[in-house]
Image (tube, rainbow, N blue to C red):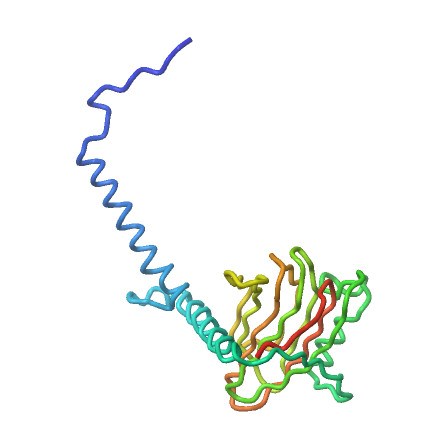
Length: 226
């Protein structure tokens, strides 16, 4: 059997070459940290590159939503949790008419759009009105791995939101999706653990915004947390 020849001392990298490679790797890592990681995660952009790449805006959304959700959860920690599922009003805005109408088309007409699950479970339609500057959190009580199809749309303006889950008994919260200045969203929420999973919305506009949330799937109840 042929064994590879052991390299000679002259073929091995020198201490200077190793130090130079280490320095280059350190500089590259620092550059990535300053230009990509800090802007996209913490909205810290000392070089201005993050804003050019639109990463700083992403970081601003994350930090703003995290701060808002934390403030509202702290404010709600001494209050009671109440359920607020309101009846559907007869009048619908043009936005709801166009958005929600697509929800109930047949699978053949859906053409790839998310349609509420037909499996046995629970269905709710929740109406939420947010005054300027007001935030609210709704959560579904779900088992690990449970799935819920959802559709929500804002009438009268846009909202910031954070779709997340909180394990039963506390623990690290999981953020599934975030957005700023959004008018609607739809999809399937899959619980990564047993607990409360849902949305926090904030109205940053100057007028009242009404959110219509439709949920269908494997959950025990829907609660207003804030």
